[in-house]
Image 1 (cartoon, one colour):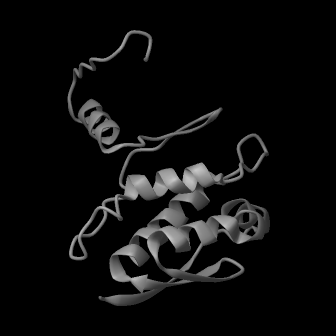
Image 2 (cartoon, rainbow, N blue to C red):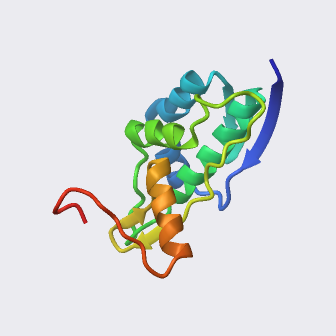
Length: 147
């Protein structure tokens, strides 16, 4: 087992955004620790992650991505819910990967609108968005009324 330690700093330092990211009583951080089998130590906006290298790498990317999601929209900071943590871990696919591969999490296109951030949640959605960006015409086949 390859143990790695990584330190990250989330900028800009904003206590309200950090509170939204970490959740009440650091529940969101504890959920990440429990699901990925890593240890996260935090002081202000500095995070120290320790554990399997692939999990530490994924957790750092997840924390950065979720911190971006806490950016104020119309003056309001959106709290990060446990479901968002679960989805971020699923999107990272870190639990399905072998130790030698590196996650591709965080390279998807995120679209900001007035009502929030739109981003693909599954690998197939990410592939669909990539096809839209790469080709002039893209067809999507699915149930009526879904798009």
